[in-house]
Length: 168
Image 1: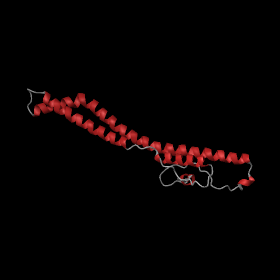
Image 2: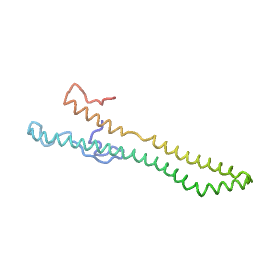
Image 3: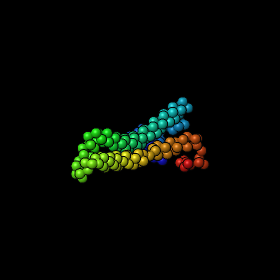
Image 4: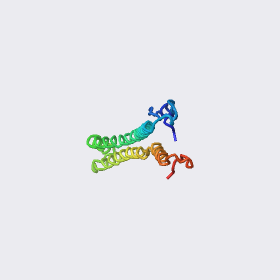
């Protein structure tokens, strides 16, 4: 489990700074503070922890959404190519094929060849889009961190249970 202090100073993964919870109190010991001050500190720390968890999840999801948008662009380009190429390019190419092979008696041969070429091109672009969508992953670091946080909150300070992440 990464500490909030690591994330606040950057850990080399390009994540932005998030608020951290101080691990020691420089103002005095806990025995000198009132119960109200301790509750206030605990509430502040839990609030900071929850905000940090949401920030981590947001950062991971942004990366995955970018992958999804890239895959969507391939699908959009494939659709635009098919829709724009059908009325203009396909007719011209089909007529050119008919003239080249002297198929004036059977003009549909050229149109059939052009249809299959356009279909293969659109299929290749759709394949690239599917590959991009398959690379989208769940925000695993945020999920693991949230599980660790929940395990820590449920332990309620039990010393016999070390804070180990639960594996499902």
